Image (cartoon, rainbow, N blue to C red):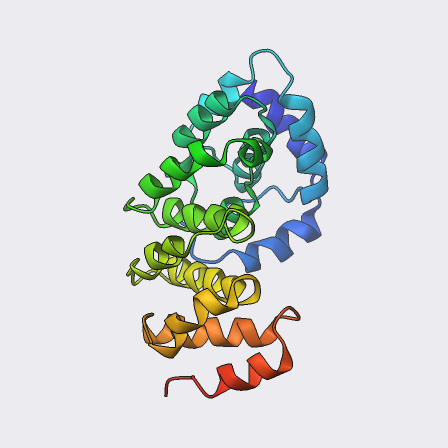
Length: 227
């Protein structure tokens, strides 16, 4: 099935998009893209998730092409059974090697299984894999900053210390979003400088860029930058 899928991906290839895409995802060893646009990959994933024998492709790791990783992320995002989704996700996460695949993978079934999801998030945050940690923070940001918010999640993310750019950027993104959605609970982390300097300043920058932060809040945040 892998060869069939690769053949289909090359049918959908857009070479100009491939060249553009390669510049957006630097630092990936052996990066090789076919150049299939995201809407086409999502559409194809919806077809494949219903196919008998799709496990053959899902088990054929690591993939050769970036587009295959994207496709797998979108297939996993479409799996409706939580247990099966988690089984495939756990198998795939160690092979995720770039921010795009990490950030665009968002299983729909998670919305109905938040309590079970939390246990996995806690485990992923302790991983040594850059994109497993990034994915964990992303899921916490996506699913637990609204009605299911708990201040303890802020504390958990603030304790993650890393030299990895893509982890630190996600921490900043998380705290900037938390400022937009849970300002009163989040602002002490900025006031008391509980984040690493780079993450602290990047959080403020991203929050100031947000339309969900008031003008007054932005003005105050500017005074909290660390030089």
